[in-house]
Length: 145
Picture 1: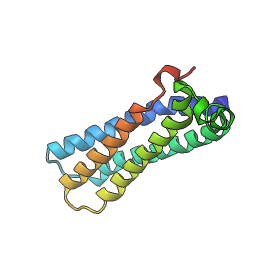
Picture 2: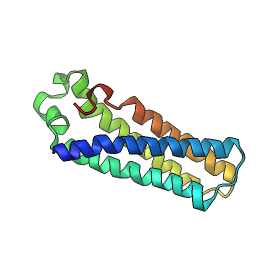
Picture 3: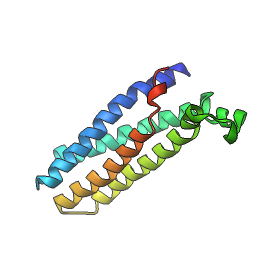
Picture 4: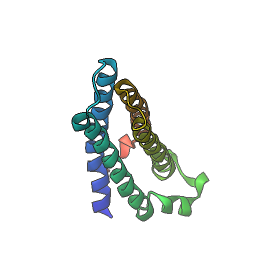
């Protein structure tokens, strides 16, 4: 289980960096009125989508095998969780699933548009909202403890 925890923790840095890169790229493309290219822009967005989903799968695996996930809720009940335990057992997974849903919606919606500015705008908004949600629920004080 320690291997899964470390994978989830270290991979988070990569996922965050790629998501930030995808959002910044989309914002620069949108505000800079650039053409959306399959070679660069599509690949950056797709790479962020794929890495985010892999991170989610590793996180879900960790949630079901870790004492800090589902087992904490089963053992202590919802009322027995203190703030740090609630963050790990409930808030972090729930908000991150919503964030991944937003990122996935952004990916799906951008494909419906032919205009570059609409593609960039869609990715900027949905990936950006997903990124903000992820950043809001990272257990900063417990990371690598």
